[in-house]
Length: 89
Image 1 (tube, helix red, strand yellow):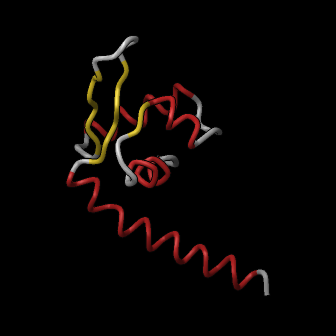
Image 2 (cartoon, rainbow, N blue to C red):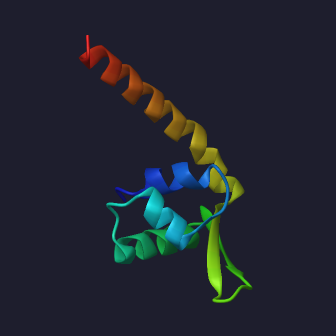
Image 3 (cartoon, helix red, strand yellow):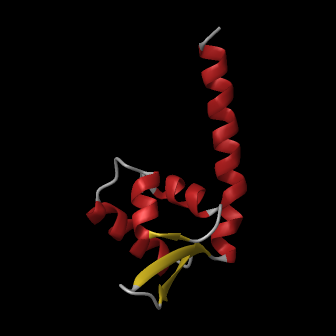
C-alpha cells in the first residue's frame, strides 16, 4: 500500500502508538491507518501490543522481518534526496 513505507520508516525509530502515527503522517485517515496496520500485522511485519494503561492503548513495533525492510527504505530515501538535489541545480 501507499502508506507502508511511511509506517515502516516511523516504526524503525521504535514502538509507536496509533495516535503518534496519526501525528507522524497527518494526511492518512484513521480508517486507512487501521487497515494498513492490520495488514502489516497479518504479514508479520509489525507487532501489536496492548499496553495496560488508562485508557488502554496499543503500541506497534517492527518485527525482525519488518526491520529487514528498513535498509531498502533508507536506499529509496537516499535516491529521492539525490533526485531532489539534482532538480534544484
